[in-house]
Length: 87
Picture 1: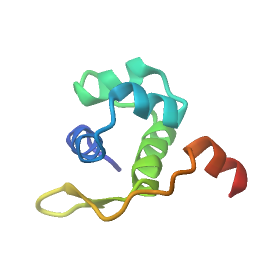
Picture 2: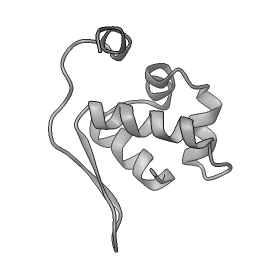
Picture 3: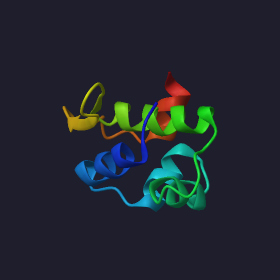
Picture 4: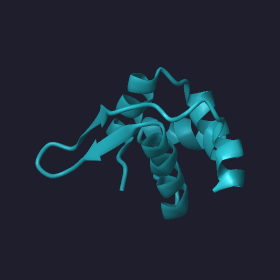
């Protein structure tokens, strides 16, 4: 599952704000802020949604000894909500 550090790094690679992540995942902004600040851990389903949106945008999560992220390619120009509807 995604970590707070991976969330911050993925967001930085994509140049997304916390608000953009919240909007793209339909989660509360406070959920994203608190997770990244390590104040609380979201429910597993919310973590999965955060990870899914980053993966869709081209982020690869690396795990093992040194968890991290890397950017492969960005998703298309279609917004995530339109993409959900067409899947």
